[in-house]
Amino acid sequence: MITPMKSCDVCGKGSKMVGHRIKLRGHYNPTNWTRKYPNLQKTVTPAGEKAVACVQCIKTFAKPARPVKARVLAKTTASAK
Image (cartoon, rainbow, N blue to C red; front, side):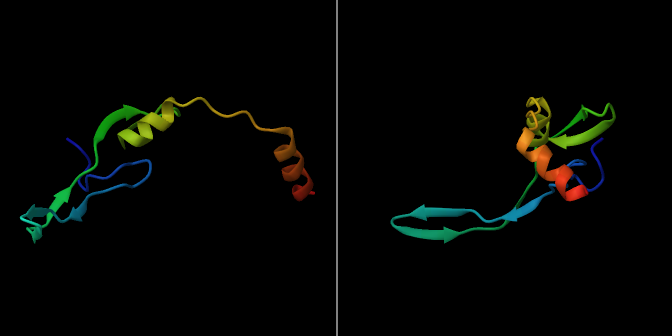
């Protein structure tokens, strides 16, 4: 079973209400509101713990980490002093 609130454990993305408009002969007919849910799946985070995450977060897990540039390191060490 998914988490009770049906939200991502990583980013907190949850459901949202969206409207649907049907166009007929040049006029829009607003219809009832529906609730859209994120694509949540059970997965293992890079830290090694189990979580329910949305697919966007799972895709982000798969991306390689960017190398830290020397200029960024110099700024952080200078500000720490």
